[in-house]
Length: 499
Length: 79
Image (tube, rainbow over all chains, first blue to last red; front, top):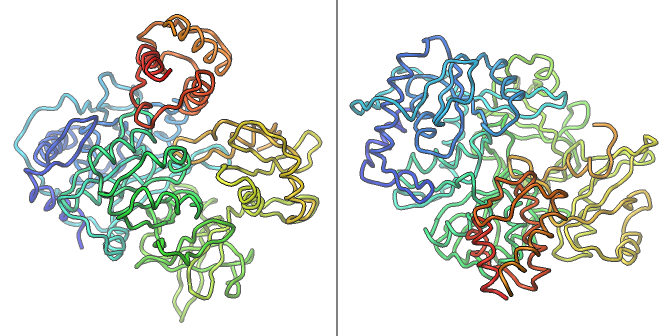
């Protein structure tokens, strides 16, 4: 399979179809092809052959999406740069990736430390979607930066081999997507779930629906789903938490596929959600950026009997090209059913963090299977595999806290609090207090209430060292830019003194 | 309820949620113009408004709240 030729073919085959719906304006595949051709010409003119990584200021417009495809046709990779992120962080990314040129669709250029190509003001040329280079196997497609523990963002480069592997494994899930489908793209382009959200529809001639930046995400998603009768939607579970008070207003029979990824998916919320989308297949997919978008899949069963642990739905089995193992601290496989760190291998795995040998040594390791060396990535996710081979996500390895010497799984406490409170969202964190002891903080999304009964109940199901010592009430949880619950911020609100 | 009464009540809610009064209650005022009015505080402000006016927004109402003027008129239709 040669992904870039498939993209060319898909665009050329669907000229009269709608490719994007951005802020209520439609763009056909022909409009997209035109933009791509115009931008490619600028890339050819201004960017050196040997420059691989090109910065892309990510706006919500057709030029930004066209820029991605234009770069790929020219054998180049994009590094998304968020115009609303702190300038200091963006400059670090530009320096680390060695970016010399930035494509920018903004009215005024955002970064003056590089050559800027203003994609809104390109000459209109004849449409040309023929890829410049025939061989794309080991070239890079994109590089995303994830937050590093030391405060310096880590670059995760993904090759076309990685991306092709993902797309092939995605098709193997047998989701029926065609040129008549309408697909949600709710993610910032700095988050890799955006890649599947625009690429899969484009490869099938379907239409991509985006979220304008000035909109409230969760309510806008709902309107898109109802007004445009979306058929495919990949979302982060937090969106469901926001929509939950309004579930009785939501009825979307057109939705065929409702996928979730990015954080733990609570089974009870999915059960309620399934009534809003009576005809959809619901799936929980999982994967870190390092293993190209996602790599395991669990299909929710509407009639029940779903696999869950502490109320969190299973992340299922490895997709076609991924091989998973669960290991202990010494990278030895644990026995079936035992907890350990989930490790991933296969063609979707990144070649390694960009210019960060130290981190690469820490999280990638080789293991021999049948005389063959296999490279694994340690996800930092605590999981177990049952005898049915489904992987159950238990929390982050670093969510595990040591309280008075005892190992504590924070997700377990969350589960018991949620069971007692019924339909309230809660987050449990471990934080270091003034005297350097680890305490357990419980944040509840609710109006204030007397917690005596709750604590009494917890004491009946949990050992004393797992009982939260600080409780806070919030209206809702802070989210990070990827739309996930920002646990760091919650930690800080409890007066964490160290990171 | 009079428009001015509604506006004053919203002003109090904004002040107590955001912790400052560096904004003017013009009809054109949007979240972007106000320090600290992000997606999280938006949720809190909406919840507080529902509480104080004893109303409940529909999911569809939330997208109509483009600026202060539209917020006030949506509230007016509910009380």
